Image 1 (cartoon, rainbow, N blue to C red):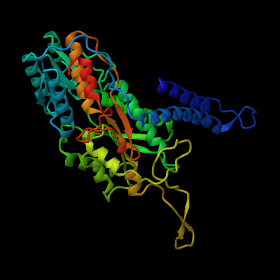
Image 2: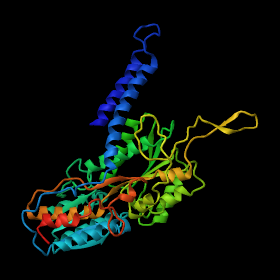
Image 3: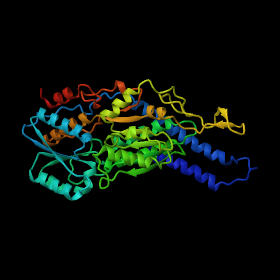
Image 4: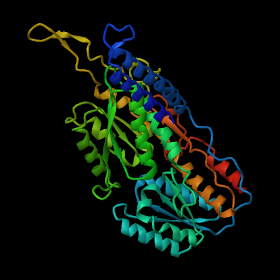
Length: 438
């Protein structure tokens, strides 16, 4: 993997510096700068590859992630149980899940659970198994609470599909974890890290405050983001603020926005990463207008909501021309401030006053960026996966449609009538064709 290879290069360079303390008059002695040059070369190499991946992510998706037709049209009458926390964000998925199921003559029973109560979650899962549905949909944040309950579904012949589950190891009782999985979350983490590196102002070395929800694949996303950021930028770093469902109501936008603003008021950096669009309601506005923050905060995230996309689209054309850090690729962004550049005014002593560096609030707002993940398409993929598993077909493991959205391209994103990102305009027709239904 890229991380391990680069880590080895950095370690080797550091060991060379520590163990080869040659005298300055030795003709082979290159001094400390020689070792750091090696490190910088490794960082530059990683940066180039990752910046290319980021450029690819800016392009609109071209596939729903599956192209194999079902071997036969599914029998009608199946019931799928789906667990949700009741939030508006997850409601987008649940609504599309029911729409997709209806096309097959199936129905969805959406059950709201309390993420702060693992015991009730396990009881709700057992109740669902007792009803003997054809399938049960869960999310990655549920797994720890129902680990001991999952095998009962398998024993009853019930297919369990998990979205947002870590796919690094099989989960006993879960038939599929390929949708919104580790592999794709790793890519998304790398892309957002590259965006931060690309848009730092000269000498910034960004520190990013990561706001994280529980969940297997979300953890994989956050780890990759942190690793990729430090791969590409030697002095960059991250800190994590865990949004604990037992302490904060994740369905209450005001509570979450207050928590995020409070955390950012003591954060060292001027970047905030939200690992789910579920955290974004009111947060970006709160950060942009909070007078207690040390610096204007750039909000980036994974899983843009309709409101996030609309806010980005409204910014089109407002970002100043980019003045990027050395090595960054061309990408629309606010003009960074050179912290060493003198300004026209002078202090009391007559000495030049230097700028403190950083961004204006408007520049920080214009730099917002989101990984948009097609939740409606994800829901149809889940129904498609159940149809394959129940009918005996091989599961489909292709990626979900996604796109890195900025103020430059958000206005051109493919959305549904409610402003949700779908990426593929005719995705429903494509699924119907694969399913053999009209």
